[in-house]
Image 1 (tube, helix red, strand yellow):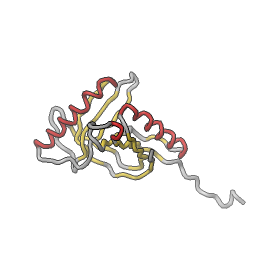
Image 2 (tube, one colour):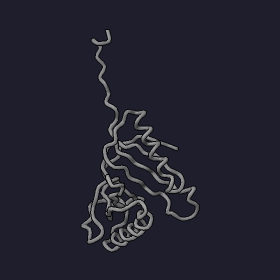
Image 3 (cartoon, one colour):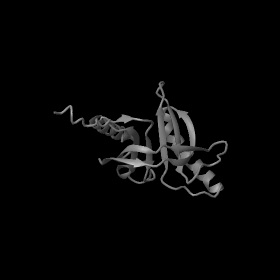
Length: 162
């Protein structure tokens, strides 16, 4: 698995939001993507990247979810679609190859990387889906993107080291 750190700019996205149980995600997400695409098509805007989903785990083990597509500027929205923003700044990115059911392994690898780097999560992760969920799921490519703060760099004090 490839894991890297990078700095990304903030990205406007057009999304649908919902609070869901884990079992509801599989059917709701594709329908939400379709609705966002239809909205963008209706207002004459093309997505500026791959589909994304952002999850916030709630204390009751449900998720606040937003799914959609990057766009160049905030959209006005309608009764289903609304504007949102993926934050800019430092992120750790891990590439997951395989079925979505095994994405937990990639999140664990991100946690291990953050621990090794003394990094701290600074918000919710999101996923970028590079392949539609068709054909063989063993080859589906998903980026897991986690905002983080790097370990504090301790300034060198030449007097203290003498």
